[in-house]
Image 1 (spheres, rainbow, N blue to C red):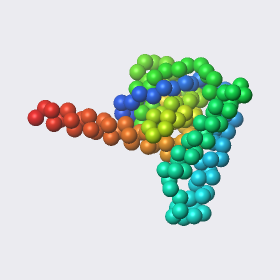
Image 2: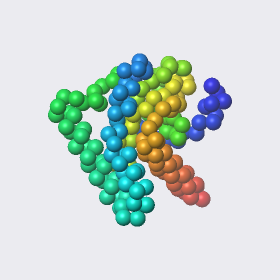
Image 3: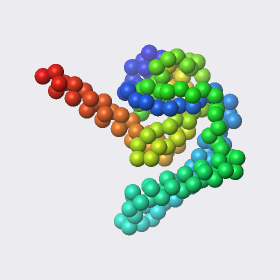
Image 4: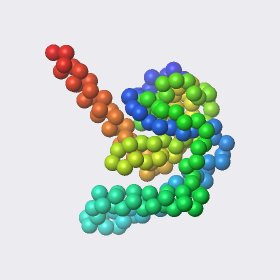
Length: 173
């Protein structure tokens, strides 16, 4: 486990994470979290060669449709984002996982989670992870579309950490 921890690079972050032990009951939520909009966007870009599509317009359209679907689900009582158990703030993020400030996981156990990430549009990413130790989660399963969002978010936090270190170094001189 210590070898895995040394390989997993985590940077400071602030993430809201709802999680619970994986009992198999979240498989349909995970599978249905992508209603085809992301797949449609990918196919459209491939079909048109990306020449006639404005990526920002497509991204905004996708997010608006996703938000409308969430509102529809809330109004119809099918809110899939109901509380699933533990809700904690993670203070570390990396490409392979994330970490909590306080111990809240059982080492070796598998979990399902919803992680709220920021950026251009706030997004709730659904994923499965395994507890490396009591504070560290290693992502074991995430959709390919959410993986891109996750990586973008990690890069944003890494750039912030680099800027902060550079500013600190400049202030010392």
